Length: 451
Length: 100
Image (cartoon, rainbow over all chains, first blue to last red):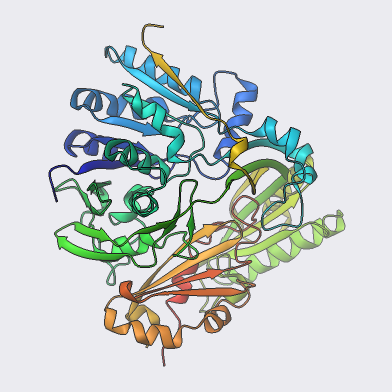
């Protein structure tokens, strides 16, 4: 690998990810950039609800803990941080980063905040006829239930922020790989229509965005796929050359492994047609990618390609979709499965008698068929089972009744039911529409400690 | 012989679709995977779980096949009533596919 390579690490693969491996990367990774990808599909909708209750909320609840842990090393070593932890309130998240810097006694910290992904107002005004993907509905059909609408911004939207001297860049919704593509475009001055390099940059971002999922997390299968020192699993980094080809590796002596097998699993993770991975900046093409083990825990990635981007951006809608009431209860010992089945039959009958038969529901025996459903292989009598009932219903009261019917099995159900639990939650569902990219306008705000 | 002896698998989710990669431990076994793991057979293996259709993409240089299974996630992660709403566990089910 040439000395001009850019070193980018992944500090989180999802909102609740572990912090210790990110600190290890910040301290020992000799990084140029550390990227934290923390937004799942409906995270922004949930954050928007928090912001409605409290104007200072609505960003990632682990933001301060993460910054407290990694800022000292990043500031002292000149590692720039990029993260979508701004969620539904990127400006407030930026202020929170500065507050952590104050608290740590760090000076002259600057945060660049990228705005413009929130397109709810625009869509309500002009987007009602847009069709909802995987559905026969239009946006107008969901409008009354809508909580949030956020466009997946591309790396292009981050470039003005990278051109400032901010050490931390905070965004809301950005396509996950674009968080990694942006510093590559910035550092190597890749043109926004250099489709091949942009495709290679997306490939690097896609490989890194789930953090430990390429270093041996979500991989171990004892006896078939063993992973060394999994308890101290390290997070990945990429050494990327100006041509866009890269080596995926990790901090020496951290746990886990980087092999062609771990990289192949992550390369295809959540990918549909490998030749057409639609991104805001480019249609990336992974169909000819080659992976080579170039050393211990080092995999060379070559052959990424790209094609011209589309005229639309994907927008995730968050909307209210009723409530889910759920209850569980366990049975063990002789006849456990039969008693668990009787419990499910009783709850089904009681809910039907109460008029709930028309609602979508699940009646599972955990330990028997809760995961594979009708496709579950028949096995021998389990030592224990856990009955689980879940229904989607219109109101909170109805969801509560579902959960109560399961708990009431204690005194009204089969013998020996134990450990009942119940949960009731509002369903915040996600859907997607495509909107013209020309209708999305982004901006950058620079925050400093002095203001 | 089971698929588990010659390949590893991983699932991901996209809306109401499950993506499923199948990767040969030894690239020499790719031809066997390509011949036997047709989209139709994979869909049949997931009867009752995946309502289809199923599409297949081949990546010979990686020794891998990539499947997209439609109508596989009870409406998708955010609405699903399933215990494993992401369908993370589906990858293990394919490992019991019997190779001829």
